[in-house]
Structures are given as structure tokens and as C-alpha cells.
Image (cartoon, rainbow, N blue to C red; front, side, top):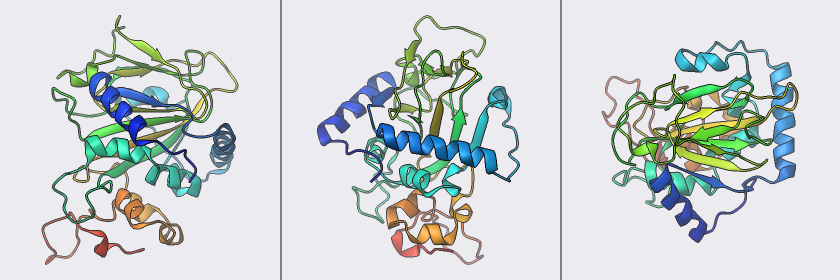
Length: 276
């Protein structure tokens, strides 16, 4: 496994902090060596990719000048493995699992990956949330993850958050600076997990070179819409090597049926999985 193990006691601490503050940091989730390999891979993919990437819309348009590759899991199997396996999924399960899913073992993650991209964060983002609907309380159907492939701080496009803002029932004012905001500095290999409802922002990088790269993940409950059709996007030869739960996380157990006579339930067990 590329990522380190997370003990049951550490897992409980992360869950408690996310419920209280809206975020938590897994320290040294990737080794420095693995982080360097992934960063080098990211840079090579960016330099040699042949797919034109359309600019994001809305507030995300601000980062259009950054080096970004959407769907990095379709380019490299290490990124695919990190996004669909590892002990961080046990933390997400506490918030995103459907306890009534019933068609797979109850201790397996049953949520899906909505998107995975890499970004060299040079430009800043004002305070925002990553959902179109906010509700009071820590319950959520969408969560984020940022894995630092190089140091992310106030000088290299680091993260800022408003602790506890994940329970608010309003959107942040993108033109406002909040006095309760704190910096979330990540060392190489650290992973930040946070609710998509957490008010968060990023710094503009002060460095022209060696700006921090990160792997950015969004996970959502199985019944939410994915931002890309990851199941069809991943090559068959790469899907064959995945286990059943990894395929579920890619969306393989919650595909919208095409057949007119198909079952109206889009929640399925592992028995429906194919490698098509």
C-alpha cells in the first residue's frame, strides 16, 4: 500500500476533530520518497498531456492560470490507488457511508469518488464551500481531501479554514476576510480531510518556482452525482487490477441504467461489477 496505516485510535481522533472543527490532518500519510515520485509524475504528465482542459467556472475560474490536471487517476495507477484505497477511507466512511446500503459488507466504504485532480497552487481562492447547498450541523454528503506532494503553507498556496464553520447554514462572503480563520500548513506527505461545507480559502503562492503541488480529492455519498464518469474513463486493463470496493468507489455499483426495463434502483452490490 502506498499510504501508511492509520490505527483505530488515530481514526477516532480524526473523526472527533472533523465533527468539532470540520477538518483534520493526517500527518505523514505519504512518505517523502513517495511524495517526490508523485510530484515528478505530476509534472511529467502536465508537460506531456495531449488533452485540452476546459477552464473551470464560477469562483474556480481564479485558478485557471495554475497547472491543473483533472482526472489524474486516468493517467497514473499510483494516483488511482491512493484515491480508491487506503485507511483514510475509513474516516470518510463515518460521514459518507449509507448505513442502509445493505448490499455489501457494512464495514466497507460505500461512497464514491466525485473527482480527483492535481494542482500546482499559485493563485489564491477566496473563502468558499464546495457544495451548492449547505445545511446546519456536521452531517454531510460531500467531503474534500488535499494531499500535499510538496510543502503547502502561506508561501506556497496553503490552505486557510474557519474552524467550526462546517455546521453553519450559510455560504461565506467571498469578498470578506474572516478574523476566525486559521492557516492549515501541510508538510510534504500530509493529508487534510475536511467537510465540503467548511469555509476555506487558499493563499497565493509567493514563489515563482517550487510552488506546492497537491492531490485534491472529492468524495460523496453514493447517490450523489459524480463530476466525471470515472467508471468509463478508466481503461479496462487498469480496472481489472482493482478490488471490488475500489470499483464501487469509482461508481461501478451505482451506474444509472440504460436499459428501459432495468431495475429503478441504482444501488447495487459487487455482483453487478464488470470491467467494461
